[in-house]
Length: 328
Image 1 (tube, rainbow, N blue to C red):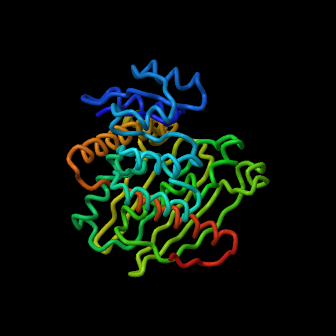
Image 2 (cartoon, helix red, strand yellow):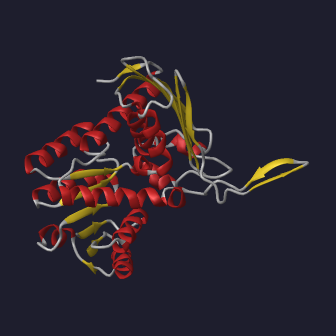
């Protein structure tokens, strides 16, 4: 399968490297608004620098990986769908749910294939946790707890374009909650503050938040986010049911544990998402390629992207109003 990559930043480098390393896959073109970034990624993947128009117009390109800024995603999805390309797009599709719906309509009309980059579904630890729940290991699921904390906040320039914590950072956790619950949240309650960086609050965003969601059957999911964790990249999930509990702990630098008079000590957790979700990104690409080749149903798809954004909007509304918000 031959790919065109649109966006040669940090996430574009991840996907570009994984595509180039996969058997029977090639990166043939790279496009980016920054010529130097495009040239650097093209060199490492054995590709050529091209424009977006060249990529979408090329009969040589089977699929596109959209790794550009969020505000370009919906337009590029539509253009790629009309060009007959299989589409992999990083989250979120857009910050506006109506714009997302419009893009998904174009995808449907074109009969295009679209996968959204919620890579955490492909983490072997979280995937195993969900599988055990589905197999009945903890009986009937009652409550899901998700912890997601970054080691440090992003620059303010990023905050200005990201759509805020709920739509940028927590959107992964909204998708993970849906993935594990296997049921749609019907109501959302959110609280949040700017405790890490006052400038984030002055920019109209938050860096510390808790969300509680409830499904129609009464299942509960709780999410804890922070832009600061002094001990590393904190990524944990716990699910409790009427017959027990299953949890996925942080991934550490090693599994070595030292015991002595001082107690037990272990190595630090991995520092950031590049290391923590390295295998998840590879498995995500494998799933996309295999589904495109076999015609199997792709998940997470555009509908999953839409649902996560709807929950993010509900959380934002709840935070602003201090009220519990029903999810339409």
